[in-house]
Image (tube, rainbow, N blue to C red; front, side, top):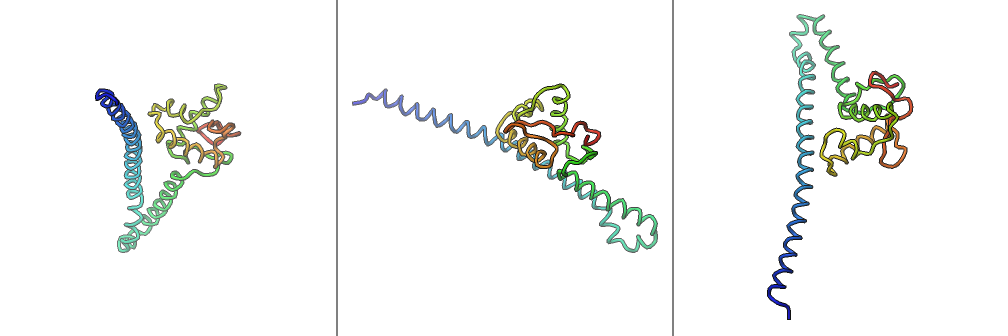
Length: 183
């Protein structure tokens, strides 16, 4: 027959394991929450900026009386307003790389990845993994952050900006060399 102390030790061990499991899950959820909150804030900022950019276009469409009084200025504003949303739209997407395409077409996150990898290539160092990039960028090396980087890197590979010579290792694609332009 097992002793009372032995039974208590077994139950304590089971409870300690459960606490450890819950702490690990809480840490994982905290990391995911941090990423989700950051993404949420970025989308809120983006929505606000898009609203600011599109506001002049909406005013010229709804303010027909004002547009009739100042036709040259309204035409200039309409041209400017129509070009700005197009520029904002291209920044939110990753265009297919082609000779001479400027890095400014990409969002800051994509530019940061390209800069890190082209700097390494220029120094003759090998490809980077997403975990190494997270460390290099000063991010917490947690699955959610590493997967976010991996998603961006894979998108850059699919669009011809990066190459993946070995699974999970990224380097600039042939011809992509500097931030001033695509070559």
